[in-house]
Length: 269
Ligand code: ATP
Image (cartoon, rainbow, N blue to C red; front, side):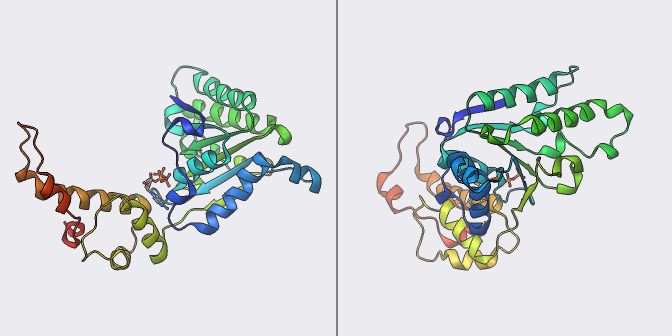
């Protein structure tokens, strides 16, 4: 239920090069997470406590998880990815025990970075919870206690992501908890262009394809939409080759394959 990825190399590594747009946001997140984990001496010297928690908020598919993965990889720290809804366990006390385990693992492997995705699922505002939602109440209380128990010099930083920041328990946003917030918003035209460049990186593109033109036509698309657009366009190109492929014999016409490009029309399918 909890993906413990160890040092972030364990899974396909995400680097800052894989993030389109979001330059200001990445810089800020690096300052809040990477700097204190890699160089605690800076904070010691200047006499302030590094942050313990940061909240990333914004619409789905804008790159919150991507940033977390990239920071973990680039900082080479122990990374624990917790999916909010997955941690909820109906068995009495099990969700809290999961959370305690996560924080314990982080402390033992410090410097470490815990990323809690969809935190609203485990820490909804307690005032919105009626009495039959006792479990969520206990989970929020446990998370608060774990955050408070983190020693600021303990080299464990927690980031949490949500689409709806106002739906999480306000107590979590108090000083010493998730007291830094960064909005990860919908990309503008330049951001979309960079994201399209990233997701079409390995594709042979036809001459009629201009990523700048595509960026101009995709107002409102988030990163996940643009990634899907590129994937679907490539699949449309592959489909053009299909009649020439003999699946029974397992023969792909090499000359046709080498000529195959993802064309402008493929993006409009
Ligand atoms: P959710 O709120 O649904 O969890 P999220 O903000 O965490 O969404 P991600 O999981 O980071 O979104 O994004 C999904 C996928 O979309 C990424 O794996 C990536 O392929 C693509 N993507 C999103 N944003 C970007 C971006 N800024 N640059 C490049 N790719 C992006």
